[in-house]
Length: 401
Image (tube, rainbow, N blue to C red; front, side, top):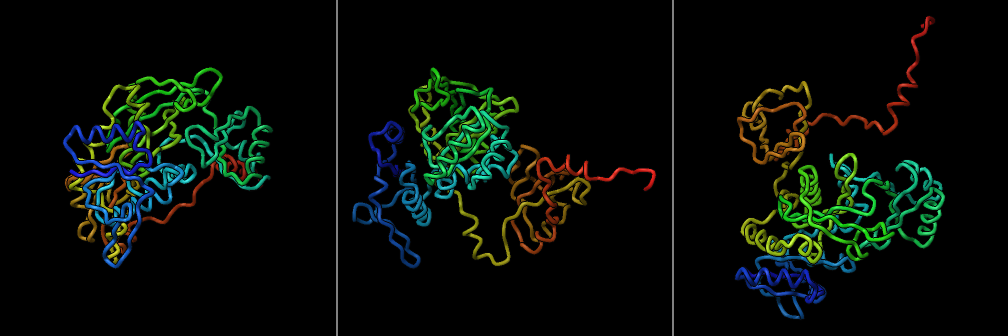
């Protein structure tokens, strides 16, 4: 198998370990400087040049895209995808995860723990946003920050507001985030490869420092994750469409809180803490999946006029409840069930004899018109705090009524 590692740091620990792991397994591996590519576009012939010459063929690409070259780096990964080369992490997942706000927006649609977070632009909205996340102390984060840079702990509402207004005045975008007191000075990093956690560590801040990042001097220790944390890490990586990810979590009183999903996680800290061959796990995953790469369904379906992928919800009391997939009539409507989601359990390619239950969610491929008829109208979302207001707005039944 011929592997390309995209990296601007050939001597960095992570790049060296990936190369060593690939060579030890008998693969042909090259480290290619991401910035030395040129994209060649022509009808039906997407191609790449490297250092001015046509690129030879590769079976696998392992992207190590730094934050400073995200746009160009993801463009190169996207070109490899158009050429049919298996990329361990895709361009969309890298782009989405690199933006802290965008990644939290994506995660917030799902039943997965994240710290209460606000993003505002106007000065008048700053203090209400601080109060909505629970008030001081609060965490203030630069959206563009990495390795703990641009993360500030504010101990009072007024100090937080002053910091945010100062950062806004210098045209910085910031997030306002709830401070999880029980996890102060420590967090978890789970290293996800494919559909499992291959290693995990706890990072602990030293001295008065509240940031636990290794680059800020944090101490690392191997940890065995509880099932809820392991499941949350894998789900977060899958939601972000990443096959290799470092998922950072806080340990809160209500369970795991996802802080960030990193698409180019460093190997030095996790391998040092766990003494595991994490680089080897990545190479093994690539080897296993190179013959069956993930497809971008959205692009493939552009030629299937009238067909698409949708999620169907089975509410309690639905006519589908108690029926098997086979007897549900979906196939007669030209709808195929790709996966069944029941609570936190995902059942891929479910058997036709499986009985449907209220609350199930079905990811289906089929005729859009048929699926549209089965999707109920969206209910108006009830905002936080609205229930209390509704109860006070309901008039009492007095004697006069």
